[in-house]
Image (cartoon, rainbow, N blue to C red; front, side, top):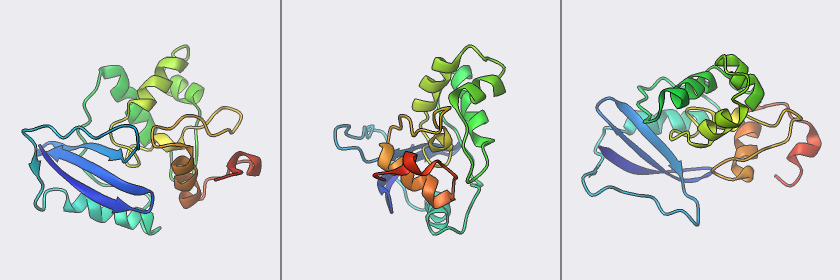
Length: 165
């Protein structure tokens, strides 16, 4: 497994992956130290393409990532993460809509948990999931970052939902 840090407009990111693809994009969160496994190696050029595409996204020049992804999770989590990848740039969805999308309409809470367990933030766009009423709901990177990402993408949210962000 290779890893590297990458500075972004929303803070420092930890990227990790292997020859199968990108496994993690994690945000620096004060109370959660990153776990760097002893067997991991500092990346040479292995994660350069990830960094390039993230930089293009943050500069407003990329709306879709074209990377090999290899997130680790259950079959249910993978179904949710695949559904997240279908939410278009600049648009949002809700947990209930995602549950319906994966044909598990009663699994709204489980969809929320899978969304929260997404190991490849930004690229698998869990930030595009909001409350059914348009409110910004939980986000591992914090609601301020979620609002910044949605604003960067030009997502249409009720103005009162972005107050303070």
